[in-house]
Image (cartoon, rainbow, N blue to C red; front, top):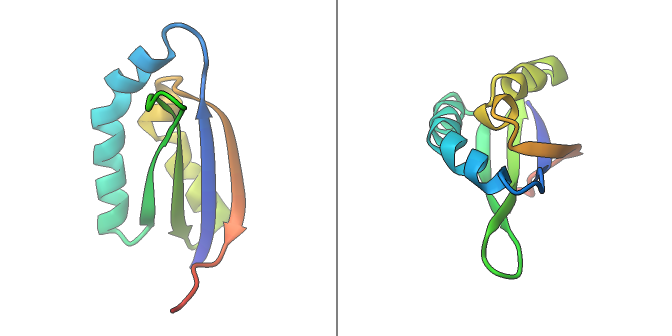
Length: 96
């Protein structure tokens, strides 16, 4: 499977954190499903200097870039306008 590092920064408007918190339960559920299917390896929230969530980082694996994109398109953080800028890089988890 192809592995990817996803770095997603949230929108910065005054309602951004509220949208994140509203979408968070559904997002976490989608990540649990991805983990059960072997797609999600690790991830979590990016924090600012005050400990507030401002984005997400995760390592995932999918057979094709299209499968990754389909998963992202259905992610509650995409649908709920939480993530503003998403950077996806090919990644390889070190086997140690």
